[in-house]
Image 1 (cartoon, rainbow, N blue to C red):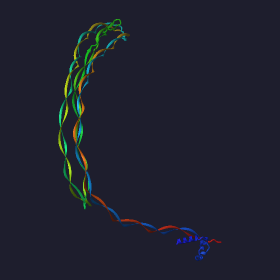
Image 2 (image 1 turned 90 degrees about the vertical axis):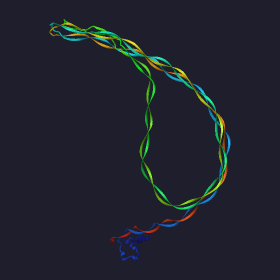
Image 3 (image 1 turned 180 degrees about the vertical axis):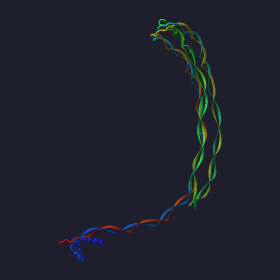
Length: 589
């Protein structure tokens, strides 16, 4: 209804008639629809409002529809067709033909050639060389140095009350006693002694000896002999037979099982083995010879003990030093060392180590993965095409060549060379130096000094007085003796023996035998077999299989899918403009 009102409004607007605002356009209505109430003064206004209208629209949609149709499917199968044929087989046979020919055999003989050579033999001898050297000998002497001093002596003087008394005074004197001695000194020296000896020198020469020989050479030749024989020629034809079967297929599955096992492992270690070997070494040693050399005799000075003397005037005692005495003193000696080389031969032992391989065995456990199969049976139908053979046979005549061996003998002369050794020997005179030890004796004089002491005593009369004490100072001179060492040194000439190696050369003649090869030729008569080819032909039956194609037809379901349209009513919302009257009061003129 509202749609119809809207359509009427649009029709009025599209007529092109002027719109009349009075009565909201109601005066423009046809007269037959106007009522008395509509002719009133225009007191009503209209405004446009929008109203939502729901309309049902029909739309087309599609749904899939499947159709199954049986169609013809054409396919091709291959069927074997077997045919029998004959083919020509050409083959070649070889016929032996024997021909003589000459063979040149080259061989080599060795001819000895003797050459003279001289070999240089170098050897070393030891030549003793005496060498002089100086050895410093050091000694020390002591020289007395006298010094004068003054010391301050404080004493007390008394008024004398004299009293005499005797005092024993003891002193000791020393006098030297000299004694002469002789010491026996033994020492060893080495004297050179040259000794001649003979050394055998051996050499070998070779003399060739030729001998003539004849050797029997046996060889075999083959003589051809032709022989006829029959050979069966067989051929086979096959006929196709189709069989239907049902077979059981055994499917094998495996299950893994881990099993422990043991194995013997061998290891090899190197074990040291110690052996001892002896070898000779030419060596020697230095022997040290010592002899004593006494020191020099020097004069030594010393002061004898002094005496105390009493001065009655001053009632004091004064010390009087003794006289200076010189006496000889033997200085300390020294030892002289002399080294002597003494050669000797030693047999020494040496330890050698070599390694021996030792086998060690031990058991080792390891795991092995083993697959245990189990079988599952399944039946499968199948068709087999079996070719049934049909055997045929015929006899064919053939010829064969048999080689009959024949032994022949020929005599071949040859020469051999035998080298006969001849041994020679000659004596060569050599010299060697031998050091012979020789003992010598020398007498060494020396002097010893022995000090002999002597005691003395005398009675000294002294006075003792008792006086008034009085202090006095007196300067007393005295002498001190200080020994100053003096060092001396002299060079003593000594001799030592040094063994100097000296290389010598001697020429030794010797003979060598060198084999010179010589090439020679010999002609031998031999036989060789040459084969002549001959072509032959034969027919061999064979079967061919030809595949024939055959077209077959079968019905196969074919499904197609199509879209089928159908109608659906769908509600659609739409806004429609509507004129709504608004009533207002009538304006007075």
